[in-house]
Amino acid sequence: MPKVNCCVQLCTSSSKRTPNLSFYRLSKDKEKRNRWDVLCNNANLKTKSAWTSICCLHFPGGFKSHNDELSVFPSSKEWKTVIGSYNDSLKQWKSKESCNVQSRELQETNKLPLVSKNDAKARSTASITKRTRVAETSVQNDEKRVVFTFNRNEGSDTQIRFWTGFYSSNILVAIFTNLLEPHVNALHYWDSNNSAKKDADPEKCGRKRQLQPIDEMFLTLVKQESANEALDERFNLSAMDASRIFMTWVHFMHTVLNSIEIWLSKSKIRKYLPDCFKGLYNDVRVIIDCTEIPLEKPSDFECQAATFSMYEHCNTVKALVGISPSGIPTFISDAYEGSISDNEITLKSGLIEKREANDAIMADRGFTGIDTLNKHKIRLTTPHFLSGKAQMDVSNLV
Image (cartoon, rainbow, N blue to C red; front, side, top):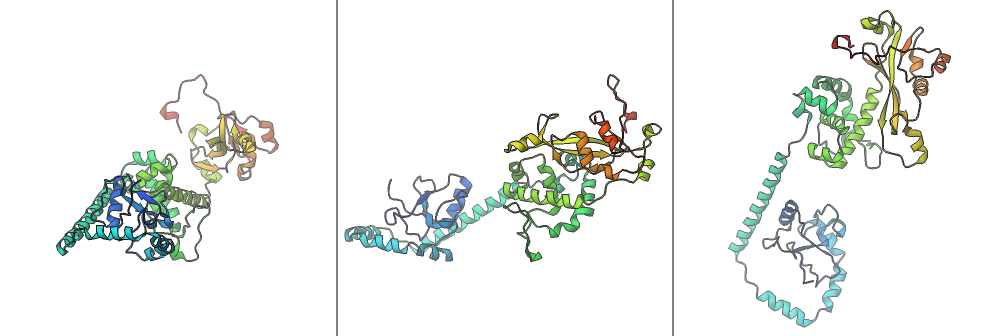
């Protein structure tokens, strides 16, 4: 390997003079290479040369990391601290060099052409121009990378339904404005240790937000159907920041929305009872069914067995959901292991404690243990099924 010199201006490190240092070639990434070129501030830098290198003194901690970012330069205060740790080794190496080598280096130095003031001024101007050009290119790239925000999709209810599941942007805005926005300034964002950050000073609750609060909520809703890498492109965030926002808002929305009582009174159920329920199903308070959400297969064998669903043929968590006869969600249970039966989750969910005298619960044939439910004085109603009959028309739908 030939002799390698550090290409950073004013740095005297070389593979011959300082063999105890590591030297790294310029990044192959064009944008990163241009940024390094500006930071090196060397008008004679040959960026296309395969041997153009930077010594380890210019990297955080004295070695090149995965992000390849430079941080320490001769013009900075950190340079004196970093270079000081190598002074002893440098002096020892210099003391071993022979006089002939020093003389030869001096002769080679004397042969270098003198730089006039005009040349130095021209090089300085060229360096400034190059920095400006790189900065302008960076700004243009940021402008081209349009951030995926709520405002960008607000005008299309179709897009809102596709990305978030909300029927319209007005509903999403109403929930955010009335329920979530009053509490967003008190948020403590999730950190890498899977715990919420707590800061005694409310003025220092983490770094400045990269997104507006409504865009953080929008990101959380979009994340349910996307990977973190996809959010990186859409929201101009790193995968780590996207995950941090998602974890924070999932817990935040659960805390706020879970405190809202959605169970309707019997008077409201009767008031909005559909005509098709009147007569046969006057006493139906809630219509229940179970929903299952697939999850990653646990490594623990006991957890695998507990979460395996015979119905879905995979590992799931299971929840009981109830709606009113008019179709309004009125009950959502906690999540249980996927192996739990429909009857067992009904008894454990807390739904039974909400019912009143003479209330009936409507369910499908999946709730087979009627005797078990009867012991708890639960009146279970099963509707007539339409197997073998024609599909309902629109007028018969609730």
